[in-house]
Length: 112
Ligand SMILES: [Zn+2]
Image 1 (cartoon, rainbow, N blue to C red):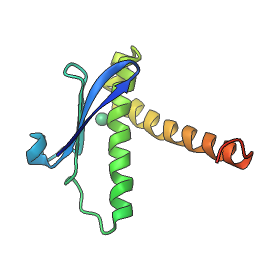
Image 2 (cartoon, helix red, strand yellow; image 1 turned 135 degrees about the vertical axis):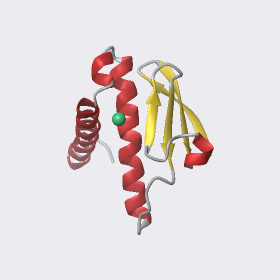
Image 3 (cartoon, rainbow, N blue to C red; image 1 turned 60 degrees about the vertical axis):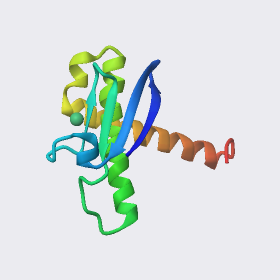
Image 4 (cartoon, helix red, strand yellow; image 1 turned 90 degrees about the horizontal axis):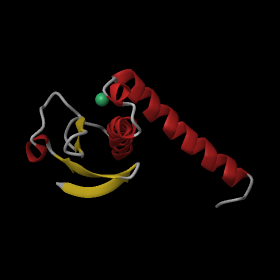
């Protein structure tokens, strides 16, 4: 199991990455976010992928989803933080915003 601490809008959160058994998480979940213990868990064994790239894409989506729960909660949008639609919207839009921003800055040769 891997564990790190990350700052989410000024609040430290522990992020744990491991198997269902290591995390003590239900087999029906790919991950979860607990606002009260400030802990995010992401399962490494929640899906069988045929390629490493597909696995990494899937894990990025799960991680972005769980971090989005925490961002909404820590920003004060407590009820939105518990709603899966808002969380999924934020995780997709935030990823595209960052991706598009870096592409634009690279095309303008402002950054490499
Ligand atoms: Zn969720």
